[in-house]
Length: 187
Image (tube, rainbow, N blue to C red; front, side, top):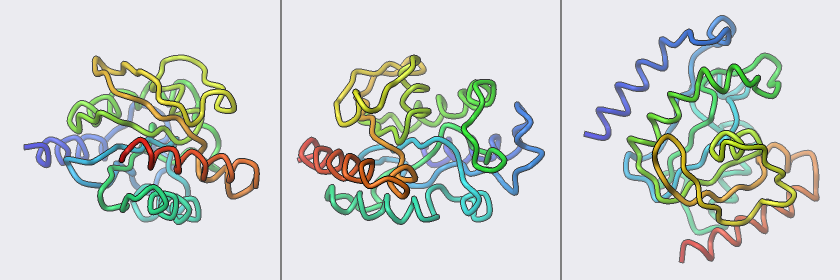
C-alpha cells in the first residue's frame, strides 16, 4: 500500500507546476529508498547531477553522505532520502521561500506516507522547513529536537548538508561528529 501511495505521489510530483522551477528542470527528483525506512533524510534541493539522473544525493555530496551513513552503521538502501524541493534551482542556488512553500505539500505527503519516527535534516533549509522557524545550525546541529510537521510528530536530528562539508573542514568535522552521535542514537 505504501509503495502504491509513494508511486502515485511521485507521478503527481513529476507533473508539478506550482512554481517556476518546472521550466528549467530536466526532471523531478522525488526521493529514493524503502517504503518502510529506518529513518528519513531530508536535504534542501537537487543539484545538477540529481536533476540529470532523477535521484537524490548522487553527486559528490551524495558520495560523502553514503560514507557518513556507513559510519553510522546504516546502508543507504535502508534509509529514505528526499529533499524539500523536488526540482533543481538554477545554479544550485538556495531555494526561495515561495519555492519551499510550493513544494511543501509534496514533502508533507511523503512524510505522511513514510511515517518516520526519526528524520535527519541535512542543512539549514531542510531544518527550518521542518521546524517551521529559522534554524542556526551552529547551535542546533547534532541534537534531537521534537518536531511537528504536517500534523505528524517525530524526532528531528538537524545536521549540516554534506555539500557544506566538501568546502569546509570545520563543517566536515561537525558532520562526522553528528553522524557518530546518530549511530549512538540508533543503537
